[in-house]
Amino acid sequence: MRALVISGGGSKGAFAGGVAQYLLQNKGRNYDLFLGTSTGSLLIPHLALGNIEKLHTIYTSVNMDQIFDINPFIIKKKNKINYVTINHFNVIRQFLRGKRTFGESKNLQKFIKTNLTVSEFEYLKSLPIDVIVTVTNISKNEAEYKSIKNCTYNEFCDWIWISSNYIPFMSLVKKGGCEYGDGGFSSLVPIREAIHRGATEIDVIILETEITLTKTTLGKNPFSLMIDLFLFSLDQLGKHDVSIGKLSATNHNVKLNLYYTPTKLTNNALIFDQKKMKKWWQLGFLYAQNKSEVMSEMR
Image (cartoon, rainbow, N blue to C red; front, side, top):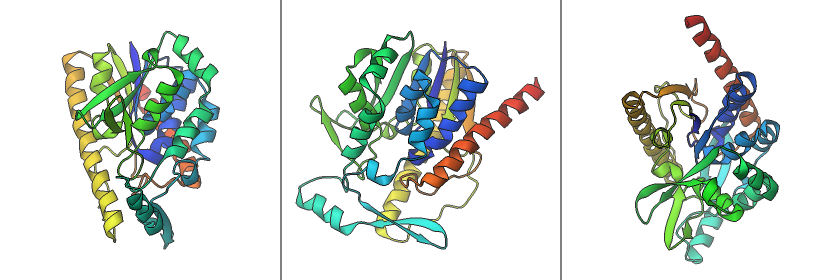
């Protein structure tokens, strides 16, 4: 059984889209299992359907307004570098409403349903493959994996949305008596789950560099510092997931093909810059192509 696993990574999902395009269209890979976390969960339904062009359009045209109905960020640019400051009006508005998050991402929920139709869902559900999204059950302090086979259309779209909710900056969702958030908080790179479900060969797209290439510059205000610390924590979790995944793969004789980003794409994956995301998609495609050629030469 062959699986495609895509990690979380916000706007860096555009890079994963380019890698997946090469694997599906140029290498002719057929997957029995698609498993994603956060931005990976947004990608996998369309990849499973083969809707590459549609997915490319989505990931190279999405903007902050399509994600946030209450945006806690103000994006400023200095010396051609984007940085984040707090949107005091929106954050105070959240506090006055008794909310526990700085922002709300209900626009993303609508965006998901706009781009994944009921007919596409029904067709995808009928295929002999499985599409699984990772969410974090914060109430139970554990990862949960939601298969399209066990969901209605509205449920599946909601799980994709929940998987992508990077709290406390996006919506905290209560469902079935429990509170849920971004799947990356519990399983950023769900390799082990793919092995548990029977995968014998896995292509894994990891939206971070394999080794630290540049020195991290921490935010210059408390809000951006908090974002940087959250991203640092997720990076450490991702490395842990990959280490555990490699060990599990060795124990179960599973072949892993790992695709890291060759360079650090951004300091803040919560900034959705259309121009950069177009470049990242192309970078992902070329990176997968070059890696494939190198692997062919080594055989």
